[in-house]
Image (cartoon, rainbow, N blue to C red):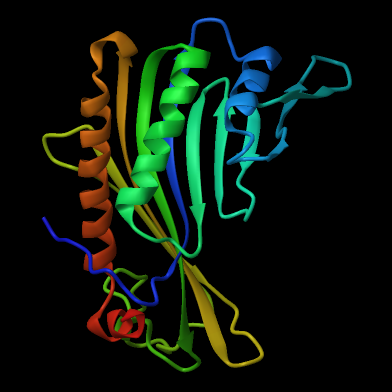
Length: 249
């Protein structure tokens, strides 16, 4: 399976490791306070995201009814420099690293440490999904052909102009003989005043588990993330050309 170079000018602006889970009794305010007390030196800043739900009910011979409700969706904890975050939610845990992304070993190690903290306090019963998302930002000059930089893109018929001003490409793939899924999006446009396009390239690798946490060892969880990382690298490296890759070195 393809590896990935360590680039001097890596394009990743955010890496996200996600563990979706089902809890036996929800995530209480007390539980979130307990997590904060154990991590407040490393992650002193917190905020509470809200989940908004819209409901629409169409009634016969009457005006439709719409209802909006919101609820606290866990808590986000941020490091002093704002470059590392983790979220404790009623439906799981995630760890984010913002640019500059350093290396997999340190990112994975911190995620594992935080997950153990979340697991011991929130006590999830079922792991539903393990996933990685890497958000990358690259720039190409105006007038460039996207195929000079990417191997995965929207192909325009040769009878049409080949210089794209906007572009939205998305695919999802299933890995044979595996529950793993891979997703890739490549989007940009319009060009900026400098004549360049900033391209957002998102790569996801995830696997649906839906197994009781009692069936997992910690080593299995993190070896699975290692496999997902390799699949993520495969998608990334296969989707870019040597011309784009050279700009990262």
